[in-house]
Amino acid sequence: MGISFIKKASGLFIINGTIGILPIAVCMLLSEFLPDPTAIYISIITSICFSALLYFLIGFGGSPILSSASTLLLILLGISTFIPAISIPKGMLPFYAEIGVIIFVSILLYERRKIKKLILRVNSSRYDENVMHSINSGAIYSRLIQLLCIPHFIITSLFIIFGSPLGPRTSLILLHILPPTIFISAIIISQIGLSMLYSLARRVDNIPVLNEKGEVIDKKYSFEAYYYKNRYLNPVIRIAVISNGMMFLCRRPEKFNYNPGKIDLPMETYLQYEEKPEDGVKRILRKYFPENEELDPRFSIKYRFKNEETNRLIYLYILYVEDDSQLCNPRFQDGKLWTIQQIESNLNKGYFGDCFEDEYEQLKDAVLFSEEFK
Image 1 (tube, rainbow, N blue to C red):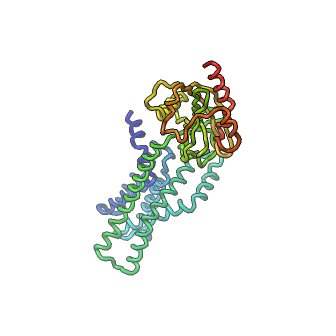
Image 2 (cartoon, rainbow, N blue to C red):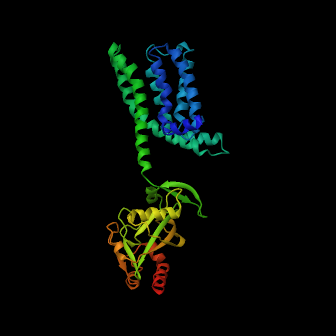
Image 3 (cartoon, rainbow, N blue to C red):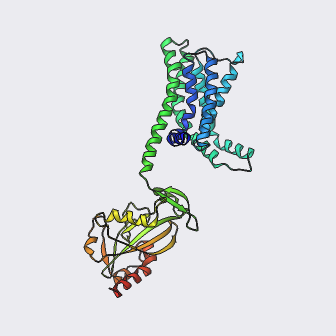
């Protein structure tokens, strides 16, 4: 139970790839109180344990690539403590660690394609999508780290070249305070951005992606449909309204991804992820008729609609309304009742929505049937 809680509670924070550089920041801070070799050895152990924890919690799904790079960098710094010729000058460990991070993130950012090819060459029998995602997301976080670290590196290098020896205050700020501050700031900025994105995502509907059999295989944000066009099959609920032998039609809102501004059925929505069609019908009725809970649309047909712009599995429902005063609703743009003759005189002229023109014969039969048994 405790492990499950940790996985759920820490998910968003761990997805923040910049958290992988936390052991480097820890090393910088420890070097202010401990000898450099001791700070590096402790940080190596911390980084290895931290990387193992990340892998245990989320595998390669949350960009642990930077954590692995940090571990490798710390190991290289640890090796340098045994080689006097390349030992780090006293008080310069934070700056040297920052340079190492800049090198690593630059390689990841600009050479990620070569890294992917190398991984595929080593493990040609298996394409691991999570590893590739880790590399891509790591490159995104690397850009932020670069943007924060490189200006500090340039300024510090200029001071060292032209202002050496550095004064105590300048040395304190440039070499001891700013490096860990920049790394911690990168983590905080990424976390704020992710939290805002997560908050926004919670307000956006997830819609199912179906296979050819109509089975749910994935999910996408509803706004993505505008970009992927007909690449994925999505379920859509449409509700026709018939009253007194006429069809109630209205203008599609301009914000709709498909056929904006066309005359169409008054109610349409994507079926949400893990939502049943009946629940989707209730949801859309609550939106348009919040004060009337007695409306009961009847299922008509389910059919596939696909063209260059969209790919839909449509659930068509028909709502019979005796009192047409219920349709005087500001939620329906330019809504009015149409006779069969009025509709047929405007078919195939680009006036109606594409789906409606496909559904027309089915709906016409429903109108005639309702009048026959009235």
